[in-house]
Amino acid sequence: MALPDPQNLPSTAFKPDLDWSQVRETVMMLNLAVAQIVHSLQDGDESITALGDSFTAMVGNIEMARSAASELAESVEQETILSNCAMASAKMQEAIVAFQFYDRLSQRLSHVAKSLSALGTLVGDQARLYNPYEWRGLQEKIKSRYTLETERRMFEAILTGASVEEAMHLLAQAQSPQQDDDIELF
Image 1 (tube, rainbow, N blue to C red):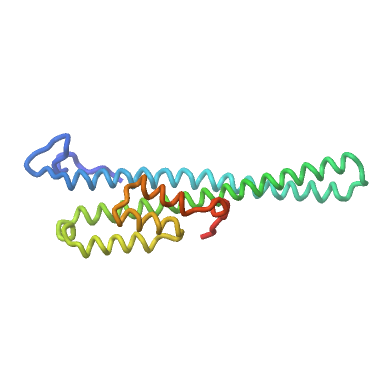
Image 2: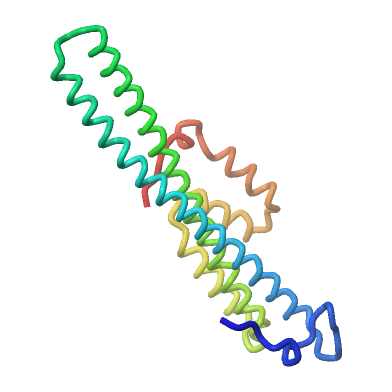
């Protein structure tokens, strides 16, 4: 994909003229943030896929070792092999939990990218920019993407005027230690 011809680009902060617009600058910065998030997610997905394939192969290898060890005569060596297989399996379970947290992070960042893109589209459209119904529609669209209760609570806190710090504090107070350990699959 070719980049646009610099001679035909609208005015920018680097070369302002009478056509310069802070709205256009805002949209460009939003688009940059979206591109960075999407690029990071793509890099992360490639790494997670490779790790997932590796863990799947390791689980198979552990099962083969466990099966072979269980056929051996009872001995210190057999017990050592079975014990090591059990420890490796436990570590694999911890890794699976970490993958689930990555999945949650990836989903949240994907929501942020889509929300920023929708915001950039709204801000860049003069016909919609000053229409409160368009803003309410954007907010409802963003809210509808949330799958976790914590995301909905943060959304509500911010829309009722809380600062980011206040919203984060409210979330921390609302979560019990047990909730932090729960994995919510989506």
